[in-house]
Image 1 (cartoon, rainbow, N blue to C red):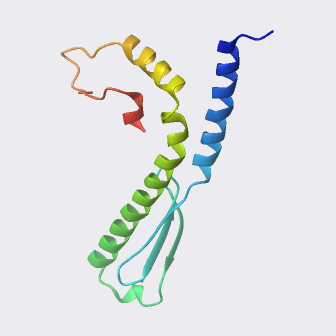
Image 2 (image 1 turned 90 degrees about the vertical axis):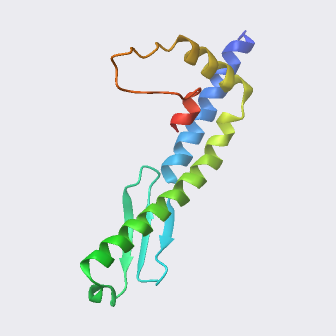
Length: 127
């Protein structure tokens, strides 16, 4: 006979694995305002696909770099929005919130000589 705690752990493990697999499949997409650049990225920001129009080579190097950077940023924002929706399955689970609270309470504090500042209240903020 399994306890309710064991069943919760198993259910949360399955849920976390499902969320993880879904996150790996997410792609964000954006197209530049002039339509010359389309970029697709994974949730970690890696470019998985980029398409440029035949007219793109006529653009100045600075304008080219700016268009790619802006479109990449927009594609990443698109991926992050999709990821937030997927993660919500975990972040809205009260059992996960209890675990996060427990882990956060045990997390060591930063020393004064450490230059890092970490005001975040939850590991969710790291996502």
